[in-house]
Length: 187
Image (cartoon, rainbow, N blue to C red):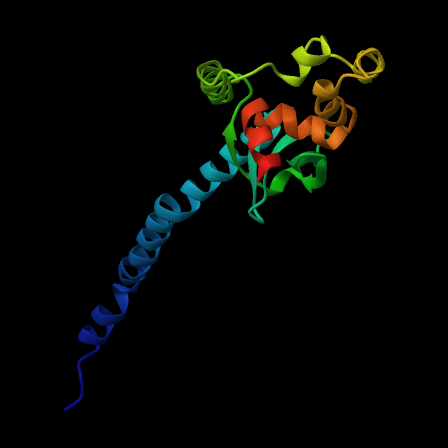
């Protein structure tokens, strides 16, 4: 009726190897977690830090909040200033930059080349306002004012003077081009 002492000793003696067998699945789970979750996350963080450190003026970036802009200035190792629209600058944390969409001189030059080709294809139908006043396209305000003074009585130059003397109209004229600007005025 009683269990012999030999069986009782045999059952308790193999406890050390059972502990290792029970611990093995936990170790395997940790190894799987390390290679599938922890290690890729560390690599992603390292790549993000390298991207943030390489951030420079002229880069087109996307922030964590969804803002898209061009880096205007790096304030310090934590902050940068980006321009999200003409004349609208925002100070951001560099760590919030999620992606650099374009480097200066990379794809931006392709876009500029396309715009230049379109501009060449669409030559203005008549003389531009710059040509009417007799000043180069990159003329400063003083040159435009001087040319406007000489052509003040000319009715053909009145619209050109009005457009090029007003900074807002001048910027719009430069952006749209002669024909599109004139068509916008007629509408």
